Image (tube, rainbow, N blue to C red; front, top):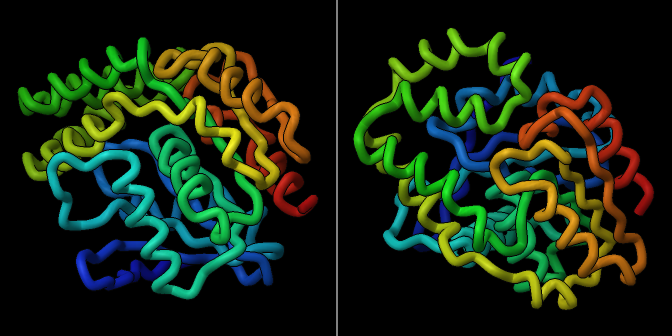
Length: 267
């Protein structure tokens, strides 16, 4: 299926997005940190999440095109919310992974009317103590070492067997990375520095499924567990932990998409 890349234009920025599916519920996906735009993988994303198409109309938003500096997670959340409002979206099922999960939490805190229910994948409400991985990636990006960045990124987010299989593909992809893309990556990665909404999570009132992995080498398994602990007494909130699928369990765990579909359809 050919996916059309669209743009939402607001008074202050433009944001690429694509949509797929034909269900009567709205699901918004906020992607994690990537070196190159996820828009180039639109067809692959649609194929991977085909299980959602009958129940949902899915929107995947990129980060804004004209990045300010600095650009905090809260700034990213405000922009994501503005994009949703501009398109007339509300009461959405919100799915954020990694950096996108941080943005999703801020959206739910700042704009509760936009979020009906939420899935947080491989993310953290407090990056203190786990920022060293991002710092290393930032150094590699600033050195214009795209190959080193792609390889370290892949090794950290994927299980060893998956990383071994995709190593050559990562090296090839690194050859196409531009300096502009590396600079864009740095701004987004630095935006997570100091991010901490752990003590604010009481302000989230929608059902939340937190999904992590015990072998997450980027943010650690404790990140998901801490979110779930803060939300455990709230109706509809739960935790599911994988073991062995890595930070990118949202890509590598075979039942991940069915799990989030079942959760969103429940509420």
